[in-house]
Length: 475
Image (cartoon, rainbow, N blue to C red; front, side):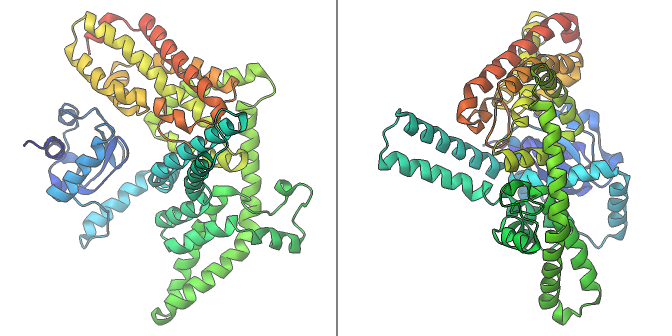
């Protein structure tokens, strides 16, 4: 029986100079991330034509778009069957290590920062989605019981509490998971990174704050120091400091004492740093960010909200293209910590819906001009787009055509304006589209779906009028 995933993996590697030209491979939901040793051996034009490849992103590492569900399976074939290295490690080949370092140096500090942020949060996305969905189910059942739609019985209460338990199991300890993943990125001890996250949400912080005279009993959230102050910004910054402390300590602590002295000294120093510097400063920064977001998406002026919603949704696709969307994840987390929900994510989720509408308009034109290849690409990518995975449509349809990439965003803006005006809030974030519906808070679900429909229609109409049949025929 033919193994399509293995065939696709091998076909991709053939255009990348073979498995020996891959330093490391990993994946996200829709893409393979491949670190290339020698770019001269890569045939990007031929790679784009490989059956099953929807597009490539020319970055370091190179990203090959193959679609949701397929990316992980193809990666498994590359690493488990073909033998491509899965985890990047320092090798005995000093020249390769030197080349790898040089590649990293070519990246701007901003891009390196975004790459680090992505490395911290992307591994947590499955848990974020699951926790958000079950938290939403718990809210719906609780609301139904309160309104009398569901009977107040042990069964429904048990189900509600079970769903709430799943949601709290991750979201309640989000800071700890963030600390562990930040430690991986910064080279600190992972368990100590988790301890930094745990410190930030521990109730003893309030007791310490009272002793130091930093606690505002009347308005606890306005305290200079309080449990959760600074949120994940404080955790990430704290773990970054931890990584430097650990590295410096290991320079002079004997190996025989490293296991005992390094963690003890590092954690004690970090308690002082978190209490006196990191949490108060990062709390101030978080408050500023929340205030800034409130001006954009929670303004007292209705017209300002509409304009902000339109611009944010319309501009999101270019942000995805440039990889800048990972920089928004901390803003989602800050909103979740401070407000108990995320209002920015539902607005930006409209971008994918606008692209779906644009793709439908292109499909109709492709059928009219008998562009069978484009019809086939859209047929394969559209279901993923409806469900919230936009990369196949971006790299297989709208971006190659050019104009639809713009018209999709312009159409999505109308959905963004509607969603922001209705104060739609999500319990978490993840893929957009219909898949994100259970992530919405109970009172926001209907308005979120209406926003998607508006974006479908907006993307379709603007693309229909501004993209000609000739444009589609020539692609």
